[in-house]
Length: 226
Image 1: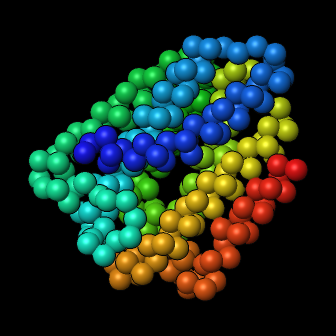
Image 2 (image 1 turned 90 degrees about the vertical axis):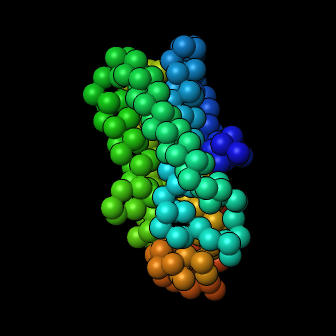
């Protein structure tokens, strides 16, 4: 159950911008720092699993995930023991990500330290803490930022120790696609989110208008890719 609560099917969303960043870095440098690449992938996966577990834990606690929900099953509903296990697991994931992050900071310096600390902070506050950011219409923006520019820029900088301006532009593409996936999820959950006073863009603009957002984001992604 714990394995499924980590939502392994979603992990490619986090891995994809890392692979793009590696491809861009190799195109500039013509070589790959394999240990740094593997540490980057490991840190990313741990952060995403931690975020998924936080989401499972806190959305259940707040009553957002109930029996009427259409999305993937939330395992915090299985009882107190599972809730404790998920709570310990996301702390462990973030702790391990931080340890790996320290190694990457020694390689990348202040920029990587800043991106890493921001990633941990927003990974938790996305659904955790007193003001869960995903409950206030910020889901698409955060998906765009952290599964796009931050992931790609951080990966490239760790490989090159500098940042070509073209990379910043190219990092927008995976961010738009990640935001599109988030908008589809929020469209699916619109009714239960509205019932539980969770504010998303789909709730704000209504079901009819929300259908156009993923279409717009995917088309914008294709334009950047071209």
